Each structure stands twice: as structure tokens, then as C-alpha cells.
Length: 196
Image (cartoon, helix red, strand yellow):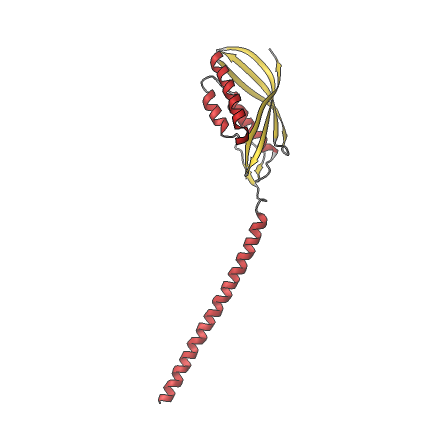
């Protein structure tokens, strides 16, 4: 009877060992599959880095805008340029300081000093002579490879309530990509054509 009890215990023990081996093998296969899946995902993600493209939707435009870490669409450059020009050129002596600060948020560090001093000089003239300006864009020439935009438009100037000039102007805006962000490095006036 003791012999029979030992045989039964051995059988139970062997059965439990077999179940534990089956669970161990099942977990090993699951772990192996998980490692392979993670390797495949890691490789696919590493090959996609730098190739993603963020598409932006402007509320009042049918154009598609996209940005990658190294390039942007021409339509995006045009919209950013229009925003910056209207921000800085539609100005009164009272709004000039706040508009300058807003504008400077889009300037790359390499162009910061020059552009800021240019805007401060313009701001001083606006305040001393009580000048207000309004820019009305006519067209844009966009070179997305060199990240440059030429903006053509009408710049109207008033002293108090009197319109003193209306000029055809061309502004050049040069940009630099900074980790997927477009930042201004150049902002200059190219041409003045008096109309009045």
C-alpha cells in the first residue's frame, strides 16, 4: 500500500511537472513572439523617422499645407508670410510695440538682432511722426527650395487722418527650418514705387 501511494504521488508530481513545462513553453513562445514583434516595429519606426509629413488645414483656404522636419509646402510659406506681413505692416503708433513682440516670436536667433533693430527704428519713426500704415497684398512669389518669399503689395501711409502716400512695395522674407519649424532670418524691403 505504501508502494502504491508512492507511485500515485510520483504520477501526480509528473503530471504537475508536465503542466508547468507546458506553461513554461507557452510563455517562452509568447515572449519570443513579443520580441520579434518589437524588433519589427522598431525597425519600421526607425525607417520612418524624418519621412513623416504633418498636414495643416487653414480655416479659410482650400490649399493643403504640409511640414516635414526639413521641408515645407509653398502654400504654407505663403500663408506664414502673409500673416507676418499683415502683423507687422498694418500698424499704428500704439500697436507697434505689441506687433513687434508678436512678430519676433517667428524670428530665428541668427536674424533676431538685425530684424529687431530694424523694427524698433521703424517703430520710433511711427511714434515721432504719428504715422499709421496698412499693407494690402497683391501677390506672392514663393521659392520653397531656398525658403524665400517675395511679397508684392500696396503700402498706404497716413499721418493722423491724412493719407500721404500709397506705394507699390516688394518685401523679401527668408526662412530657415529649425527642427520642423519655419523661422524668419531675413525681412527686407526690395522696392518702392510711389503711386501718389
